[in-house]
Amino acid sequence: MSKKHFLWYVTLSAVLLTGTAIIYAFSPSPTPGPGQSAMPMCHSVDDFAAFANDPAFMAAHPAPEPVSFDHQGKMVDFPVEGGPNGRGYLMMAHGNTNKYLLLFHEWWGLNDYIKKETAMWCHELGINVLALDLYDGKVAATPEEAGNLMKANDPARSAAIIQGAAKVLGEKADFRTMGWCFGGGWSMQAALLLKDKAKGCVMFYGMPEKDMDKLKSLSTDVLFIHASQDQWINDQVVADFEKNMKEAGKTLTVQRYDANHAFANPSSPRYNEASAKASREVVRAYLSAK
Image 1: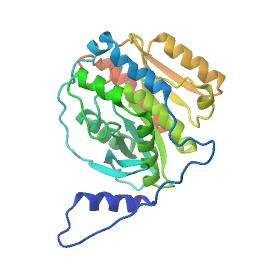
Image 2 (image 1 turned 135 degrees about the vertical axis):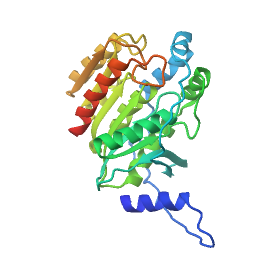
Image 3 (image 1 turned 30 degrees about the vertical axis):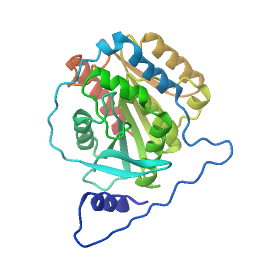
Image 4 (image 1 turned 180 degrees about the horizontal axis):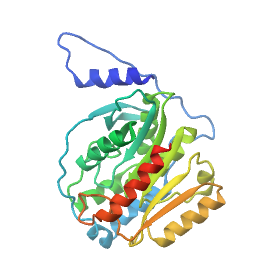
């Protein structure tokens, strides 16, 4: 589907047209052939979700502070194979471009902070940005709610959402991925699912993929933002990731900051302004070159 058709679909789904009935049909995705898996289980994502059973991890994530911003983008929905429509927050660049950045939210869900990031990166990079909702409309206000949502997340459903978004954005679209915390792991999973359409991958303190066969299939390099004080995505996890990526013949750049998990989120009490600003400059340079 062309980007023009996608924007028509978004507009028509958002506006009630008096006295007019409009039907827009999407053709279904092909069924995977023998030996193919369109929606693989993501064990690294499951590993991260297990942190929600750790009281220390829960205590390290106080409820986020309110965020205010101008709603410059719009919520959109799109067909997803095997289930209900997927959702996301879309911000289109002013120029005509087929470049997209897919954003993946923290364990809180697609909240106002992620929507603000969507607008910011769209303006700064001059490309289209779509923040995908892997919780299907649910947003957490407390660590307990966030932990339950993260544990309940179905990797197969999330993979289908990513593939549905890529399909509706069209064959000419190419993608960069970025996420934080829970979404950091999904940034990498998305890059794997998108195959040669993935042009860049940024992970903020997310769980890396450990399966060597999957890593060997990666078509892009990876920029990993590491918080050296992180007790969960710790130095050993990152060292293992560096080793695995090297063995897989892939390029990994790790930027280390003397900060704690969730340091890049201004709505988090753990926000570290100096490290956050420094990491954003690194990410901006990386994505601008893609």
